[in-house]
Length: 347
Image (tube, rainbow, N blue to C red; front, side, top):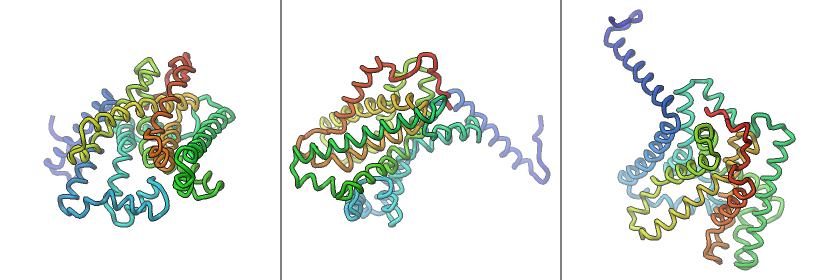
C-alpha cells in the first residue's frame, strides 16, 4: 500500500508521520500490556536523569558541588526546615540544584501522568486526578471527615509527643530548637504543623504516582492488600537508590550504607502499610499518601534532630514501624480492605 499524503505533504514527510504514528502505537501497546512496569521504569529513568544532570552540572562548574551546604544554609537563614516551599525558593534564588530536587521528587507523578495519557488520553488523566478527592467511592462526607479528623488528630498528638520527649530526654535548650522552627508559640506551631502536611516535597510531589496510580494497579492484580503494599514499599525504596550514587562515590562505609538502606527499606514498607490503611478508609484517595508521607516527614525534618541526638535512634522510623505493626494486628493483615470491594479502579 502506498503512502497516503495529506495536501502539500511530501512523501518524506508522510513517511516520518507514519513512522511516528507507528512508534506511538508501540508505546501505547507497551504501557497497556505492562502498565505498572512501564510506569516504574519511566519514574526511575526520570530520577536517574536528574542525578546525571547533577553530575554534569558539577563537571561544568565545580563550584556547584557545594550546593547541599548552600541549601541547608539557605533553609536555616529563613528559620524553617527542608520542605517544598524552601526548596522552591532556593531554586528561584538561582540554584539549579533546587529545581533538580523538585523534578526528582515529582518523578513518580510525572511518570503516572505520562502513563495515563499514553494509555487513555485525557479521560485517563481525568480518572487519575479523581484520586485527589479527599474521599472516593461510596465513602460519605461524614465518614470522610471523621477519617481525616482522626488522622490529623493523631498526627498532631504524636507531634506533641515529639516535643515532650525532646524536653524530657534532650533538655529544655534542645526543646527550643524544634519549637522555634514551629514558630515559638502554640498557635503558630499548630499552623506550621498543619501546613507541613501539604508542603512536603516528598508527599506532595510523589504520591499521586505511588498511591494514585501504582497502588490501585497492584491491589487489582495481586489479590492481597498486604502483598500489594509490601511490593510497592520495596519499589518505592528502590526508586530512591539513584540519589545514593553520590555518597557511594564519596567513599561512605559500605556496612554503614547497607545498614541505613535496610532501615530505610523497613520504613518504606511500614509507611506503605499505614498509607494503604488510610487509602482504604478514604475509598481510594491519593491524599492518604500525601498526608501520611508528608506528616511523617515533618516529624523527621522539623522535630527529630535533638531527640535523635539524645537517644541515638531514628525515632520516626521506629514509630512508623510500631504503628504499622499495630495496624497489621488490628486488621489481621487486610489493612482495612473490604472483602466484597477489593477493586479500586486502577487507572
